[in-house]
Amino acid sequence: MKFSYKILLCSITILAAAFGFGGFFFVNYVFESSMEREISQAMNDSSILQFALETAALNVPSKYDVLHDSTIGQIGANLESSQNSSLLRISDEGLQTLYASEGFVEGTELLSNMEEQTRIYRIIDSNERYYIQTGIATTAMDRSLYLETMRDVTDVFSERDQGFSVYRRLTFIMLICGSVAMYFMSHWLTKPIRLLAKAAGRMTEGDYAYRAEQISRDEMGQLTGDFNRMAEALEQTIHQLEDEVRAREDFIAAFSHELKTPLTAIIGYADVLRSRKLDEEKHFLSANYIYTEGKRLETMSLRLLDIIVTKRNELDAQRIDVAQLFTFIRDMYDGKDEVGLKFQYEQGFVWAELNLIKTVLLNLVDNAYKASEPGGTIELYGIKQEDGYCFRVKDYGTGIPKEECKKIMEAFYMVDKSRARSKNGAGLGLALCSEILKLHGSELIVESEVGEGSCFYFLLGCEEVKNHEAED
Image 1 (cartoon, rainbow, N blue to C red):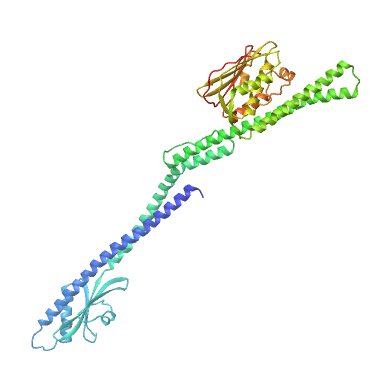
Image 2 (image 1 turned 90 degrees about the horizontal axis):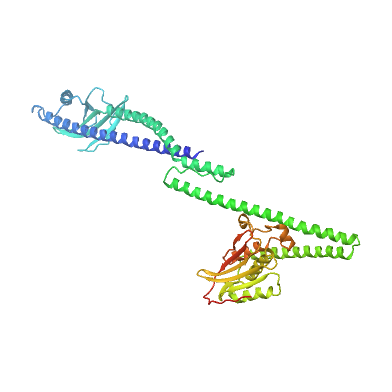
């Protein structure tokens, strides 16, 4: 059952119960008030008739020592003719009827339950008519008499029945009107829910950009806003996951391609060496090619392993003297005279994992060597800044196009693949550097111009430093 129908059903049930009980108590309250008024009037009439009976008995001539039954009957007839609102009956000590109005209900049930000098009443139903019957014991000329009256209250009961009938019709009409009103109201109240359901359905079908319309500022409006914010976060997460899956697929495709190319060459040249007898020069060239491609595969596998290791999200940071890093790079490239290496740095300390930062600097310098022409210069800078210690590696080589700068951090991406492969490049060095620096809460930034060279730099947390310059 729809939620709007549930609201409608509950509302109709509550409305019907409210009208039913309300009408019942209201009509009953009016009826009971009328009955109390009629009972009070009947008791007053009984008191008046009692007084009139006693007075009439006192006016009987004194020659009669005893009040005869016929005289009592005559007094009863006179009392009835003097008023027309009630029927009356007079009985003697033995409950024998001495006078009774025409239509007075037979029976002595009321008198048999009456004590002396008390007045009682009951409501009786006779021939589809309703009466209030009263009874009282009185004394007239040493005779004990019982005076009963019957007051017709059929109109009060008719008014009650009519009230119930009118209220039933009114309740039915109000329920119909209320049902129509509640139908539109429930439809309006549940509109935000329908919009949310529609949005959820669209998102289930893959339309993650769809948002629910916010039509109010109440709790449902807040829920719609929260749903839209959740949908936005979900959309971003899904796009991130899609990008990650796409990147992983690209990585696998690139890795397969990078494996296939050197392996094909290695297998081909190995087959030539195995199946043919070559002269010394061709034999050397074939073996050298196998050796070169094998080293490239080794480098690629080691760097892939390093990238996997850096994703462990654990860092064993320590206090490192930057001079130690620059000295390490100088010793590693000492004797390579084809490209000049220049150092300029400010002495200080950084917080990092030593081996990982050495790997970053080695990869950056190695890339600078590959991009530089013989006789070129590579510059390494260490600069103390307010927010950390900045390492810069600058070369004056081929440079990188601006549209390529955002892609060079991706695994296996190479700007000039033929040049990179000729120098055992695998397109993994910068990806490795990027992962290591992310682990340190930093990032690798590149500035480059085609034909003018490139500058790679990153920032690490540091302590106070003092100026120091060194050149090689």
